[in-house]
Image (cartoon, rainbow, N blue to C red):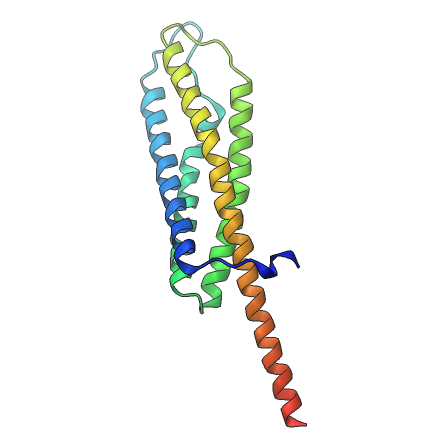
Length: 175
């Protein structure tokens, strides 16, 4: 397996977790900004601009980044707790899936633009720019979650090999 030789220190893991938490807070705050932006729209002849990512609340999906980052930091401080490592690993894998889905929805949103009332055009344009900025933060979250997942896999694999060797030594010592 290719991830057996991957190593990362606990302080680096804490940094990855803190960056995940910061990205999650950033996404939630950007969603709140979009909420305020789109709530101020005026009903016009062509209607209001309500993008797909806003309707689905993808900015609030940043809460998964916050929770995953918190578990990553906790797992870095308690590396002997196998269940905590598995929980952090599974949450990071979930973050990878959330990131892929959110980036896909953002690309779909940016690819299609229907006309809106001239009164709401500025808000729609600003909202699309915020979506573009968020689109650039998804690869960062993806990379962080993938890095932790690979290194966590390596750490769990080494723990598995150590426990298997000790069982083998116990069996050999009894004969």
